[in-house]
Length: 289
Image (cartoon, rainbow, N blue to C red; front, side, top):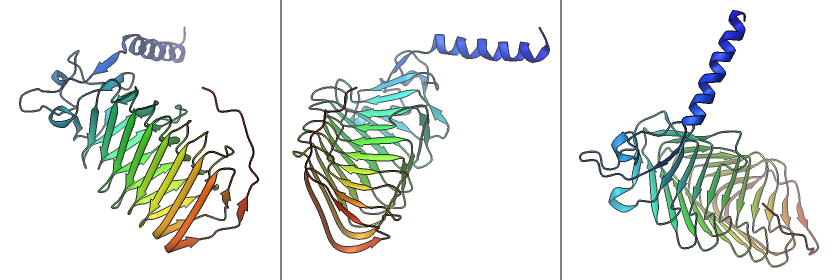
């Protein structure tokens, strides 16, 4: 075996060993003097801080919730409020990189994220952020201060109820953003400042009886694809309220599709809109997972 092959073999074995030892990390909190500190091993059930290969479960809120105050923290998947209310805060100097985040994972559960720091998600994940993941669950994602989020797909109200606040000098950058996806889901985005940048589409109200609502009173939203007010279900609802800030369509269209589609423009700037497209009502088979 030559030197190059030996190095590759060693690297592969190291990675395989790390994966084999990866495990679920359950947040407990409560360490005296550091009851909320993500970076303290004693705040985790097994006594160790998560690595990039670990799935994290946070089902603690109020005084015992998790807070990241330091940069360069890692996880594989972060699941908040899976069986009971859970909360994770990212302070202004904190940063976390993970494949994906899911808020609200079972009926009646609530997951909350308050982000003033930095979040990066892995490009290998099909979905970066899910808020209100399951029926009858709820999720709340608040991006404030100078916080930032960068990822692939984001769902606000996937099958439950989800809300997202974007304010201050923040940045929220994803490929696609869907507000109100699954049957009877409700998603709401409130933008009072900051920047929302989408590489492709902004979809409000996708499947049967789904509701997606956006209130933009400040900041800038840039859509490189289309703003889709509902999809192809005639019983979905999509509403965009523009009362301040800028909606930059980057040469793309606003589509009024099969459902109850509304665009209210009372103030602010609607920039670089190519056309408005109105579709006839159609039906389709619901998306399966």
